[in-house]
Image (tube, rainbow, N blue to C red; front, top):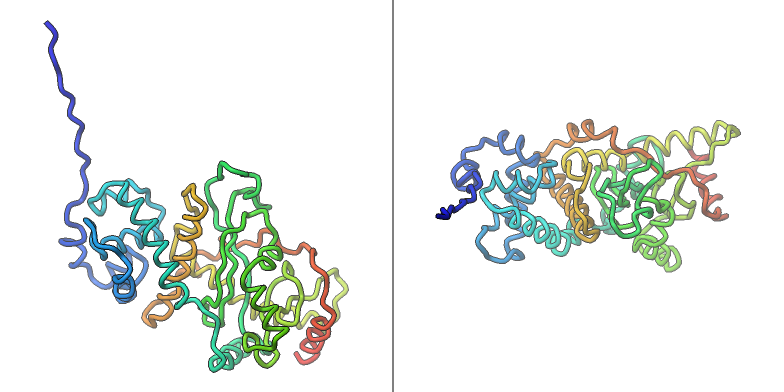
Length: 345
């Protein structure tokens, strides 16, 4: 006689009522230790995102907590599901929804070019670092490690041998982002990323039409990967033949431009998901990266946030991957401008 048996799938053990019953008892330091942002910054995020997040089984606060925990750690969907008492699919859906909506609704307001009335303060702030004049921002690219894509995988392998997406960013002297652009594969040169970015198109138009984007002969600072232009000052190429004036220019240029390296250090140090984004959809990765930039900005607007610890934690991660390849023609008028600045320094 056959005996029928029933196998019951063991119910997964998850933390119950973490958001409702545990988190409210966290101290200010407890919250910061677990989510790497302050409670004040998180409350500001909730307030700004409430109008854009639809109602559902998971409340707005819990969705945002899941998202912040995801970008501030390397925890798996399974671990996040266990912590917040939801299923893994809900975590997946939450990450995609929140990152996309932050990029759509918050990014344009939080990451933007300085207005004409604030440009002077930005220039003065950069000049106070080491005397370099006319700087309105520092630009660089940073590689975000990703899982090797199945389509055209070779395009994503950078010179260090790992797959990545490139994040191009401009920051001010206070490490706030003025412009961010992400999505090009890791094998692409920084100069090509720039030339295909909205920033390049806007800057070229500003130069020809003399609009306020670069007022009073201001410019960005970039490393040797970028083309020299009237709105982008780069170092003199060092082949062992630089004179003292050029060496001094390069030193002051480098010590001023370091702001963008510190900004990337703060970004990756706080939002540790950017050390490796284990997603397969490129568009989703871009949303995660840019949403982290947005939240970095929100942290900086909260004066209570301390970013020094994150810069130190992530300093070794910001390596130059594909710089110092001369693929651009020199702009004659920009060369004259650079020499004039070098003589001034």
